[in-house]
Image (tube, rainbow, N blue to C red):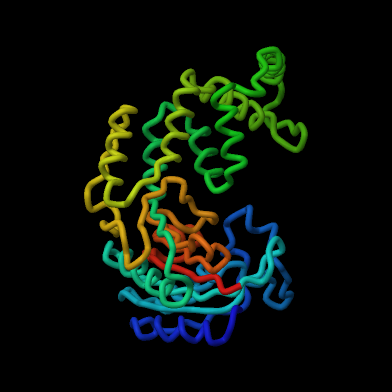
Length: 340
């Protein structure tokens, strides 16, 4: 943690804004960890008496959601939390977060961003930049494109990893690794396997599953004929960055030019003005979530100039997370400040 004084200033501000402290457990039942990419970085142990496997908490927002769900409250609640999270692929991460649960209004998104901006300017730096995006926009673009389902799923799954996203787009654009000779060999093998008992196990998989996978890849969902055009649209969309006030017009022009049936209203984003205090506000289509938490609006506030090594604030809306880990439906929006 940077300093006790720094921590106290932030928590004092959050309390004054009406947020109540929520205590978090230091361990989590791994049944709540659905992200396969995250599972390999957990510090786990088994409780033989309870016949359960637990992990040191890898993410504080997740822990906060689990703890709040136990309250069985449907009223809008403003909470904050603090502590450390633990993953094998990173150092211990100290964090303060504040969230609004059972939140159904865009005003709550605006409140989270505004409070984050105030904290940033009071305690982190006077010069900074707010980047706002919405995951639903990227999903809408993909839905409008003539892409097989499996390609859309792969792009959405890889959107958080720039390296792998670029690789999959390259394959889509150039048909990289698509060897017609190998395809013909696969087809011959396919027809031979059609004569085999479908329940026979080959390489730990049933024959019927192997055949189904091949049919899906080659016959049902082949590579799209207009791969280059599709990749160009995706790449150009991910380059859009503009003052937030201009975002609806620029986005709608982009959608119209590319014949996409998408329309962004003037009140789509929770912030309408290009500045909050001294912070410039941008729409940035490349502001994508680093973790599979946010499913709607998301934002970050980062220093610029000489303050680039100082803390940043990230946040967004996560309405789907609770049900995805087996909890009751809880709409939520929040933000977190990394202190280490």
